Image 1 (cartoon, one colour):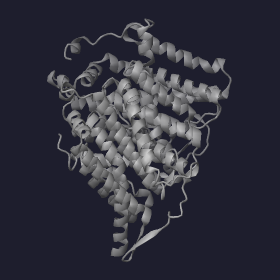
Image 2: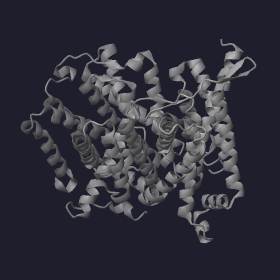
Image 3: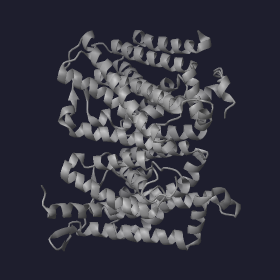
Image 4: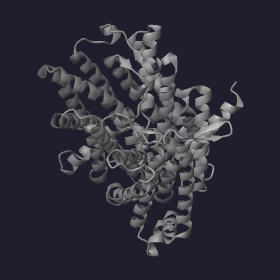
Length: 290
Length: 328
């Protein structure tokens, strides 16, 4: 048996990892909730954002935390453009097509990155990468605490945006009733693109928070994307509090599976949860829609 | 013969079977064998995803099961290669049936079905990668022992004919299904599941039959891969790459059409090789092209290459399905 301290540490680490998972899942669930599409390219955009953080640091000397603002804006613009000019026109409004177009995009992005950066793994070295905070008997990585804080802040901001602004109102209107929204004068294609842009912007934040302690290679997004799907399904497709809760749960599950089953089997718990939820409760824990 | 659609199949098979007599280059024959293995994988996908409209993102689950069952039987238990092939195909079919039973019973369609199949393949990949019985991360190696009984050939032409035989069987199965009542029911399920049910089609049974046959074909492709390369590991056999290959070829060639997978596989890999020749050996460059082609096909040519040819009037229209057409 493992001592309670080790289990507690594993759970805490799981929560910290889960916070970043939640951040990645937020964009995915928002895009699903509004556009009703599964964005298969989500992981590839994350990889892109992580390379951008890496490039900003090693070429321009920009600190990852300072890069949050410019990269968020840039990725919002990229997401907006991709939805408006590629995914929207190419898919003719058919769900199956959107899935295939985003799959195609993810293949293009991942392999273009592979062609440019090769398959080397890169990481940042900042002077605070290994700083830790003491919490009683436990040592916690400072950068990962920032990750948790960032996830909570972004969730809060996203909630405010959706609940309190006109843009948020328009997004919710389109999510509920596309035709009705366009009848009252909302430009649905614009709202779609804005939503997709926000989804990519959250990835830029996630990338900035991840990079001080994580690494990047052209395949890294793939490791996150299935986890993000699981969180979105578990939390209920389209539910923002669901994504936050789901992310934390999945982080803990992965950490405990890794502790009890060994590192190589750590992710199996995630996929089993994914399959079970899809089979028995496809609406998720927080999902309202059947 | 042409009325039932077998003439084009015979022509394609004959043309490919003749290539070893005209081409001596081993790299060209290698290319054809590899593309034929992909074609067989994709023919499996096409039955379920193309004809039946249930897009799977996890055909690696069947490919890998075929490859692993055959490899374990041969390497650990000394079973004859041909017997291992038969058992592996049966295992693949069973895995297909189980995944189909679980997900179709739960009513998963569209994106949900795509995701759950992907998750099943990932679970199998992690298990195969982590357990000692399957060789773990080191994978499984078959002993080189050339001979017909071991399904290992010294000449690439012999293996090409073997792979072509399998692809031919796949084509005939696909064509027979396209001509059959079951095929019409499958198309009805794709076009409108509720309408098909209202007409008395047992939707669950039709889907289950489709995924079982589909998985068996793809499992056979996994076995062929193993016999050709004599090595597999979890990332090859259960990797996302083969799920994507399985789906790309029919999409590009012509979704749901009998010749779609073979046309698509040769088009894509031909383009990939051409790009490599032009751009040099930059990793990932061929796959970048595949992604671009997929997006372009979805955007501008939903019928794939065959659909384009049909539009240009180079190919006769397929026969409509009379009884079920009115149901839409």
